[in-house]
Length: 575
Image (cartoon, rainbow, N blue to C red; front, side, top):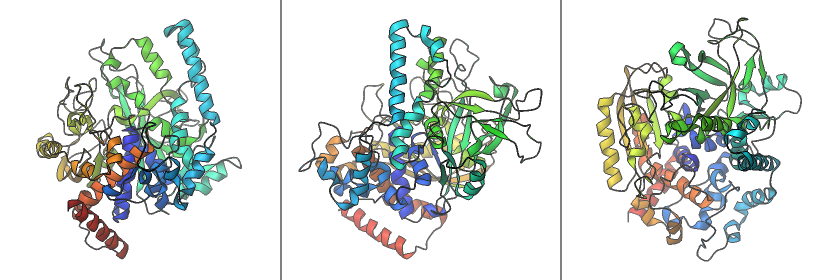
């Protein structure tokens, strides 16, 4: 969900941590925009975890000044590449400078000063874009494609550069040529690198956080074309962690089409985006020499992952217009997609060494934007799933939240979509195979969906706890026949929360808040409001359901004090 997903994830994580629940989780998965919160959460060291996440506030307290100050968390307020609020908006009795008064915001003011100058990588990206525009103006689209293709990567790293600048640079996580690993592997990695190379380490153990898994996808941009009625969109889920990265399932033959063999290998994350130099042994674990292949911009490993995981342009195939455009335009789209060097033991040369290919990769949202698949592969039996996918519907001309946009959740239960045109049963997009994303028993969908629609009509979020039967999905590597208990958190507009806001804050937010489209939120004030909203929903509705699911009754002193404070705030709001 772009900035929407990132901001809501920030608030949800803050509230779950404050309530003492996050420490009980084994895994935290992020996909698409929530990756922009997930990576700094684990890797950044410029501020403490408490300062990164900030505090939760009663909606009546959420003035524009508070929402753009450091106390709401540098994870949203520190994104200084974005404006504080819309240019024509003037908050009551305040100016932009007033929002940063006080010692608590010293780090925020320092970040603003340090980033007044335009960084080199942004200048490079602008130069590349200007060259592209000039090419189009002088010779037209198709005639300049050959120039764009030489060298490879001339446009393919723009998204990595841009997203690294906006979402990683505020936390000093995009140093050129840097590597990333788990905090337990730093010494091992340092021995293999030249002196002075920057290493970013994920600090889940030292910060008492769950193990982090994020998703991207290996793409096949020419699959699923309308002129070929037998062609369906092909994509393969990639898992990224601080310890290992790769495609966990193995695909050969027709399942791997249009490739010879895909997946069945996880490599050390610092060796991802490289070429295998040796054959892979038959055992479950092998030691294989890998040559890292730096990108042209060499933005660093975190920036590469950050860009690939959130490259929403990769999902053009899942759009009706994307399946109709000429192949010439597909070539252009591929040239602006992130690419990764990929190899598999299922695709080897005559020497037995895996063949390395430079292939398009991007946002996992081409098939899944929920984040439940890595957990189901691991047999996790208790989950909390946050989703804000019910984005406002512009196709009908109505600026209102539309639950039918929850295509991934609907497909997970094997249902046909309710948008027009309707997607195949068990598929979140036209062109994907029917049943390709079905993982839950279809007959169990209706009670869940009835609850969602009831809350939607009442203009409130839906928190639904239920037990669901997992079904086989061989393509996704999921073995069914067992049950999972899930607390679904469907973030939709809350009239209760919106009515409690200060008038000048409410005037900036859309009536379909928080269900903005992925790139629609552009101001830190809106980011922070979304974060605070997710915390409010979590505090007021989610915590009790999760504690009941986990059978948690004992609270330590800090947690008890937090809940007492939250209880006072909720009581004030109800009154």
